Image (cartoon, rainbow, N blue to C red):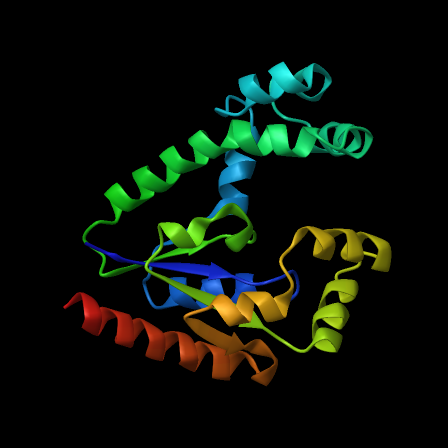
Length: 197
């Protein structure tokens, strides 16, 4: 059985970069955001259930995220309904991923809202990536697609960083540089592989 490592961290904390390091070392990574994109794509499994909730968002045969976002802004209960519709589809995707990679001693589940969706209940360990708040804000606002108001809205949906760290099995401070984080990833893989041996 593979050791299932959950990877999470608030926006701008270096989660995607850290996931990339796991891939570099040959560890398969299941990416929740990428899976949602695939489910929303033309012919994706989420098109029909989302269409039942928001018909205007699926008129072209895929989920139009801009329409969906506008509808969510109008209806405070819609987001939860969408998450409920996606839950079984994502569970099936995760199970398929585990089956495909059952020979691997370690697999990673990259989930932005890991604690918020109770994913720690089915992973063996959780790694939280963190950075000081000023580093986080600087990284996010440098992207150009984000402003303070949107960042604050996203952060309001996420469990605060200090609470995530308190629950974590492992914590990486990504403000110490990419090479440092890469070395930490390598050491953690080796530690988890020993456990699976």
